[in-house]
Amino acid sequence: MSRLSYQLPILGYHRVGPYKGDHVPTVSGEAFERQLSFLARRRYCVLSLEELVTLLDGGRSLPRRSVVITFDDGYEETHSVAWPLLKRFGFTATVFVTPGEVGWPGFVSWDQVSEMAHDGITIGSHTMHHSYLPLVKDDQLPEELISSKQVIEERVGRPVSFISYPVGGFTSQVQAIVKQAGYLAACTTNRAFSASAVDRYALRRVKVTERDAQPLLFWAKVSGYYDLFRQLKHPS
Image (tube, rainbow, N blue to C red; front, side, top):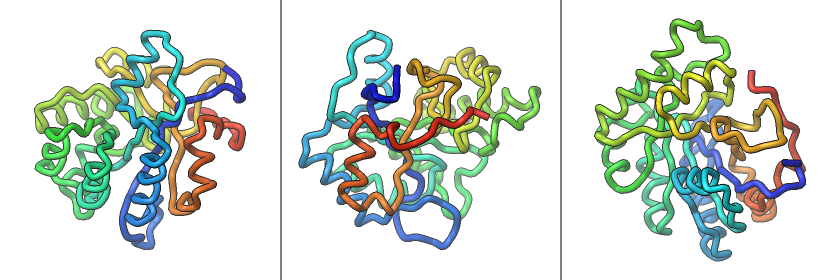
């Protein structure tokens, strides 16, 4: 698959809400609302990751004017700001949480995670400790990749089928463990071993920031051809 090929956009958000002066990529609630309105007005279909994987497994062509919405880290604003707006527009999303950080100040609680999960939001793993996986020792990878999945499933009462690699980093060994653990797919950032094919265990995403409050920039990111404007990074 070349960079000229259409790739269904998987949008990657972090915090949605007031900017707190830290390093976290943040989109204001007002900008997020405008982005969802943009998708609704132009009749975009917001797919779940489950639906995307089904399309990929079936070898079917990816529908144009479709997107997937994801959130990393599990900030409290995902529950208090982003989720109510998603519900207003009738859109679904996947929220990747780090069990070791759930309940910390500024992050969602387990009750909030469960509330979103029981309302149709897909909950995925973001590793146990938000670790950069290429630097994690081999004997610690099972805790990051497998135990995190098990903890979330026990606390939420729902299967965890997806994982997001922190900062997008992964290796072939990481992918092998993710497959063995029973994940259906994994999300990265703009990283891949090769751009010639879609890798279900390294689904590339488009990061969304406050700058994308500009309609033209947001349109470029949901067009399916945004790879024309960015350079592929190595997984590690």
